[in-house]
Length: 325
Ligand code: SF4
Image (cartoon, rainbow, N blue to C red; front, side, top):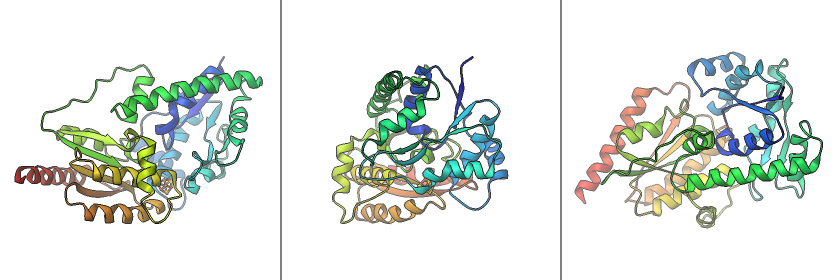
């Protein structure tokens, strides 16, 4: 029987799931993903959680609990950096320790250390992750190569104009109809940490809400990396957070793009990096009179009605601006 590896549908699942799933499956494991976040899953995690932190980290707990009795291993990598010149928020590196400390009865955690800033460390980490399933380094390397190819296909689908959630569905073999291009429809860009924007529970399904209001959605992942780099180079100081760089670079790009009508920045309450980056995005947006902008700070208490009211008002404002022109 295949070894079962559990992947929580949270945090970097929204960025790396096709890579991780292909890698473990190629090595003979069966990958099990937790169900999409619901109030029930969230509450399960909250019962265990002590202290205060951002919504995305609180949500992981519920996902881990729902997977615990179904899998042999939990895949919760200790992520320090995923690109050379930035790093992730410290929550990512400490997460396996926090989970083990609070829930000592969990299945063993594959807490592989990933730090691409350290020379030669990535391949070592990949072997560490794969050796429990196959000790042969060539087989592990081949599984990783296949995973990378699948990952590139996934990224290409997003660059072609679909959301990461939709690209994940296609990767999993589901049918996804391309978003409708309505004549005269509004083009709205969404920015923020991927795990906040694409988790329908945390974002209150903002993408579908906006589509119902006739908007076409643009996201940070659709922008080429070179453009993000070019935009953040205009700042006087470097941004050290990976998703922070992506958020600010894409905000600057969208604010300069003639086809974008509105920009929405989704922020998790109690997120340290977002509270600083918001100032940079707000400042740029204030100087831009053409693109409508709003930021939405969300936590577990954010209600659907409040969200609908704000989105309705935002869309109405853009329509009036258009009509004036
Ligand atoms: S970057 Fe913000 S939202 Fe993401 S894990 Fe860190 S504190 Fe939480």
